[in-house]
Image (cartoon, rainbow over all chains, first blue to last red):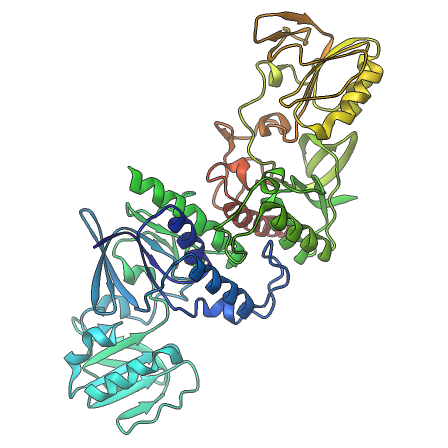
Length: 282
Length: 282
């Protein structure tokens, strides 16, 4: 089926948009985590969210989950790694399946920087964001994996079952133990290769030969998610209606820039939802 | 004293901004109604405000009031009828007193249209928004009063104590009874006069001679509140930081245009507050 809208992300901006789009009877495919925003979850006390005085992050996420469930909204726990604009909408790659949608809402959160050097250039050429999609290509080979969060460790395990050798890089203390996994052999500096990734460089200058590189992160940088989207630094450029430069593609929340505040995010999600309703009516 | 910021309005955008400005230790003079937004109050059920599922308007306003009080914020119940930009900030006329502020946040809500024909042109020339300020000028004279809400009836009574004759126009059933007040002698169509208001025209074509006209409304149209502010129709033009064309003057909520949604309003109030903090730091 072709959905009215694909929502990417499950933080406050996405939640706000989903509630309003649902009220407008739009068909929604919503990609994210049922646990919702880890950033909200880690907030100790939120003092400036109107209507919910001095709430803790976990409590607010609990309220959000209740509200989502009561509204009959569902989150599909698949990572979106590519969005392609077509003549009549968008093809969204979620996990290893393709979903059709007339419009897209990017609510992917703030992404620090643009990833590793050469990451964007070699994406699809030895660099992959999706273990399920591309893992089989590296059966018996040597790969590097950057795992940005414990949530993706099951994907590392899956890759290690296929590959011969795995260099694993994590920004946290990782206790993953497996014969063919070398955990944090150093700090990953860059991906190497001309037309195809063929190695990695560590911060200390060490070069390691690899056949492929997997980057597993909660949020994919928008520039790598959808080609040709206008950015200002790492921020998606939007107008007052939350429209990006790509017709039918809207953005809301931290991914559009500061202030990184949930109150700002819910407001933008609401505006984006109304703009999407108007766009679909055209 | 000179306040860091004057907030005009007491709906969701103003509340959101006030909470954040208070967290940033800014000194605030906040004009509005302690009862908060009548528009929220009249909402039966709000389904798309993230974090507060299926809330009624009165319940949400109650939550807001608690939060405002807990944060030590106070609302000054004076109507702002004029804001003048000075070299170092703004002079705000609230009731009959003048307040100094470095910045201004307009969160005045949606205003339908631009008022009566000639209202803006003759403001200060026989047309007044402020009974307390200008009432004494009409001692023993004949005046027309447009009273937009029951909340302003005490001002009508005050004017009737001074004036000889009062033509009163209300958009609601008014039971104000006083010898020298003629309640709803017809529907007010326009204010008449070249350089000074000297009459009014009713919808049925009747012309009535008056010495002055008072317009008492909960929200004053932004164009009449602050000279030279950029509008698009009735909406205040703002950029993504909620800045207007007047340096130091920001706007948020329904007064910046659709969607007229409280979730949008709280988001804009949050962004405006952060922009004000940044502006004050310059």
